[in-house]
Image (cartoon, rainbow, N blue to C red; front, top):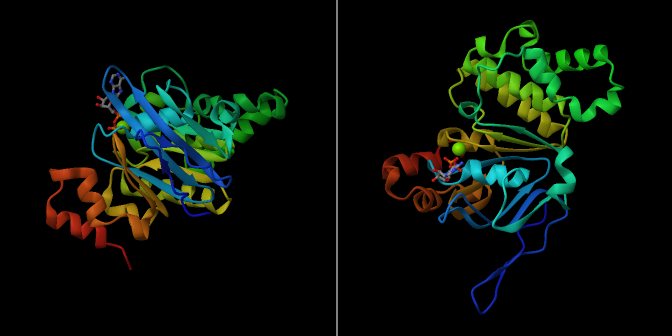
Length: 272
Ligand code: ADP
Ligand code: MG
C-alpha cells in the first residue's frame, strides 16, 4: 500500500485529515471518543492496510477497545470519520466482522454453539435463501475451520475460554467479511487454541482479507503481525512492525510501565 500520507497541521493547531488511501482496509481520521468529559481516544488517525495482519497495542485503559468499537461505528464519535475500503463505515458495515473481548460477553445466555455461529449468517440470509439446511451446513463448515465442529450442539456457556473464543471466530468467519476486527483474541486461551486462531487469521490474510486485532502480548507482535498501531489515548506510533515496533515507541506508549530491559528485549526479539 501507499506510504502514509503526510498530515497537514493548520496554524490553529488543527490536524487536517490526510487523504484516505483507497487501498486501506480501515482508515480512521481525527477520531475522538469520550464516555464522559475525558476522551478515551483523542484525535486519532490510523490506517490499517488491506491484505495484512495489524495489531493494536497499548497499555490497559489506552482506548484500544474503544478504538475498535468506534471503527465499527457502534459507539458514537465526538468527532472524526471512519472509512472502510474507502467508504464511510456506515455504508460498509456488512463488510466487517467483529470478535469482542471475551470478558465482555455474557456466557450464561442459553444458546448452542451452532446458534452462535448462525447469528453470523443472518446478514447473508437472502443469499442463503433462508434455507435452514444451507445455514446449518455453512455454520458447521465455519466451526470445522476452527476445530469446533464436534461441539455444535453444546451450550456456549459450557465451553472453556479457548473454545468460546474459537466459536466467536467461527461466527466472524460465517459473516464472510472483508475486514476482521478482533479484541484480544488470544487472551486467556491455551497454546493450542492460540495456534489454531493464528492459523485461521493467517489464512484470512492469504485470502486477501484485512485483520486488525487488539493484541496484549508484546512478545508475539513481531511474529504474528505485519503492521502495528500503538495507542495511549493518542496515536503513539504506526507502521510496518519491523520499523515501528521499537524500544522508543514502546517507551512512549507504555511510559514507565515496562522495565527498560524488558523493553529492549521485546523490540529486538523475533527481529530475525
Ligand atoms: P483498553 O481496551 O485499551 O484497555 P478501553 O477502550 O476499554 O481501553 O477503555 C479506555 C478508557 O475508557 C478507560 O479509561 C476506560 O475506563 C474507559 N471506558 C471504557 N468503556 C467505558 C464505558 N462504557 N463507560 C465509561 N468509561 C469507559
Ligand atoms: Mg480492551
